[in-house]
Image (tube, rainbow, N blue to C red; front, side, top):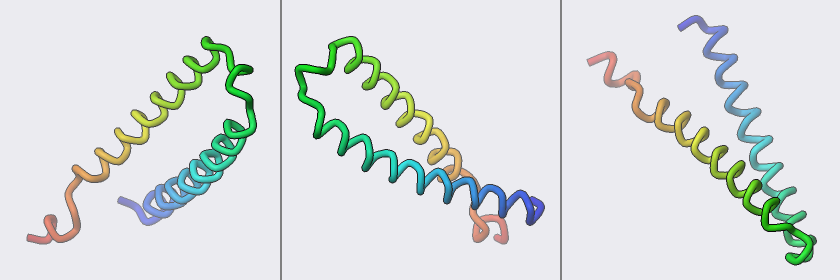
Length: 76
């Protein structure tokens, strides 16, 4: 893998990490300030679907990285 692609992937993961954490804090704070009766059932369900889809997508990325060969395995 070219060094440039490796650096690009590293930057993408760091950016994703930063944005996901920041968004989780912001969303949690917002939810805490919204009276539950204001959140329509349809909106709540849409939010849950979208959050679950995000979790699945992140899970696939984690699995891809975790299942790949390591440097130690490649040098054996």
